[in-house]
Image (cartoon, rainbow, N blue to C red; front, top):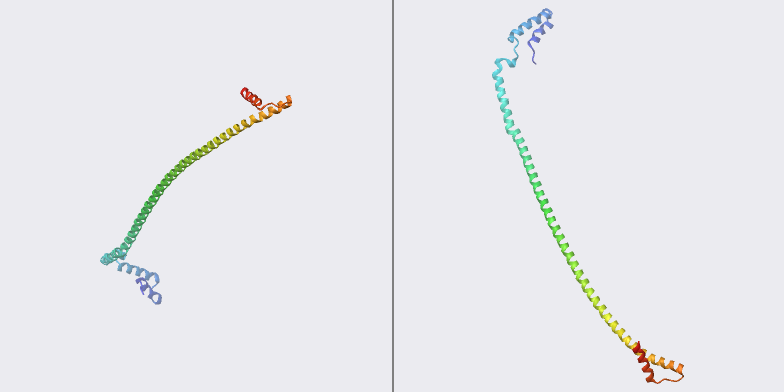
Length: 203
């Protein structure tokens, strides 16, 4: 247990009944204390302690330097290097992904342009094929209609010829009947034919 000199000098005065009063003891103690420490110089500023203080300063600085060099600086440097490597890897990965995305977009655009070109070609081919088929169908239909028209005209001619032939016979019979009704006598076939022929010529 540390005991100051002031306490050591004042303690007997408190226990000894024959000791001097406390005020006088303190006055003497103060004088003795001042004389012991050479005018009250603070111990760290005392020149007698400089050598030990410098020694401990050098030891402390050396230990702190070794701690910084062996532990703190390598650890901080490792952390910084790890972060630098991580950032570099992230940048490389981002550049790779960007390149892949650009390549994918370029491939998509090329495929889209090719698909559009093929679609236009297919549409043009389909239009040409439709036009060709329509022209062929129209030609076939026109040829069929022409054949039917020719057949109809031939049939009409046959019907006309037959009708005209029957008209002559009907006219002869009608004329014979009219003569019988008007005259009361039958006309000869030659006379009736001649009359009908004359009527046809006039018509």
